[in-house]
Length: 318
Image (cartoon, rainbow, N blue to C red; front, top):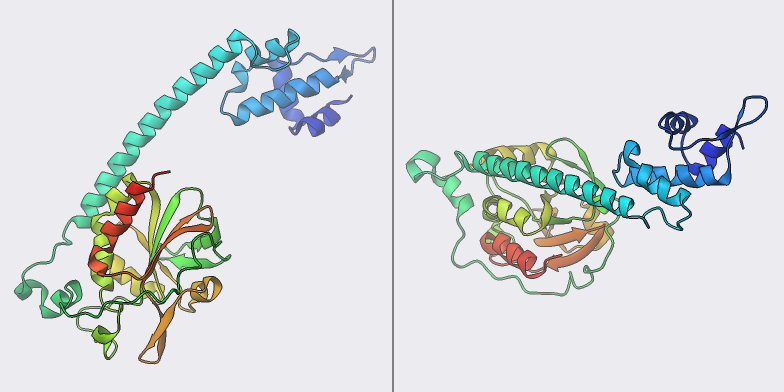
């Protein structure tokens, strides 16, 4: 067969085939007219090279596997030399993982330190009474009742919804990946000097978004260490509003904006109305591979919720 047919059947390019030849990994016969003639054995060898390459084994180190096949073995890794190459690749990968893990830990430490630098709440005369009000909870807040509005969520696939985050990037909720993503959903965060909706404190589960967010900030590193791949806050407030919250509270994670409450409609999340506005009820989703693995609802008290999520992650390791 010609090189074009070999490349097509093996799933590589003709240029790649010529490169394999230059390394002596495949040796086609030559016809009387000088053209190369490839066989089924060459197809098998090139497919094996492609498979090993996908595993991260460089083409230049494929020879033990190909020689194993040439020796008549059914599998390319039936020979001792092939196993030795596996071990070398695993050792190198382990070294890389350890180096990346150390680098990731340093980045998390730096992010955590930066997020907390200057985020402490000072005395009332420095920060103002209004700032204190958003960070503390009244002692007589009504406790929300479990109305069963989240019972259907575990095992439910997330809809194909794309939301903007505070880094101005689109986040597709059904494609967050195999690692656990924590999405804590809240009604709204207030700003110092800005009035909350009328009767806010009397609505069960409404008050406490800022203390809840600060809890996720303070436990962020622990959440990652417990298996969370990412953390997002989500509300119906617009991205510019959320950017101010991220900067003011020095959050090490981003927020998602869903002004149309598309996630509530697509996933059947509970909502309520205040000041003629429809808002999310407070709940948290643990998402993995586009599926809701666990849902926290109702949530109370909100300032202790991040610790509740952390406890669940530690008790349910992957």
